[in-house]
Image (cartoon, rainbow, N blue to C red; front, side, top):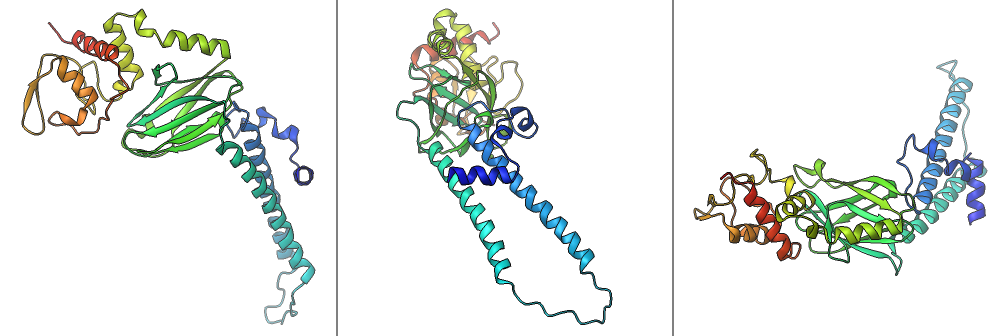
Length: 334
């Protein structure tokens, strides 16, 4: 089968050298940064050249037939046309053979991408309106995906609200992320660098801002980064740690720290203020209020705002909750 595929590809003008030409492909595809990207791009090129070949063939023949068999006398009776068995078998067998080859290659590539290696490095992913969070085996949580090179990585993904879609263009990888269940996506990054990460499923008004990055690092560099990142709060004051979490956990998507309006209430002058809720009750925004707002946001929705904040239960430990409270306190004018 592989020899046949190579023969078809070469007859169509697509060679392995062309398929691996990143400079040429970079004109219409993102750079390749994973081991599976080469096969996917090669398949893309094969299908593209098949389409170009048949488009040119059909247009050229159509033009020749228009010139060769144009009607000179509108009243003349044309010759009777009967079927041609050899021609009909030929134009059926050739497309069928091409489609079978494309199906086999596509199915093989799909199965390779659908089954993660048993020894893959696992990272937990949570999608929410409108940010991503990545939890590593050490317990560290980040909103930027860091992965090592030359080591299979499996993303175990779920959503806290609606359907999202993890899309890594440079890895040629995309998978929907659902609330209430897990989906998996794996890849083996082989080119260090920083690459874009998107949500490819419309998930609400701020869908276009649900953007992050994939940072691919050499193995030792990744291990060093994870060690430092897993103990990052130990190197900061509580206020600095709270600001770091506000940025890294996606709080800045909805809560401003300059007093401007957002999807959620601003953190400026929040601590100690009287809070009025949609059900008519009120309370003072003290430490317990902030903690409950992070862990049980639907239990007390501030009047004038929608209850769209997901729970962060299990995603903030006590140290991190204390840092967030300290940061919010620091934003209150004395």
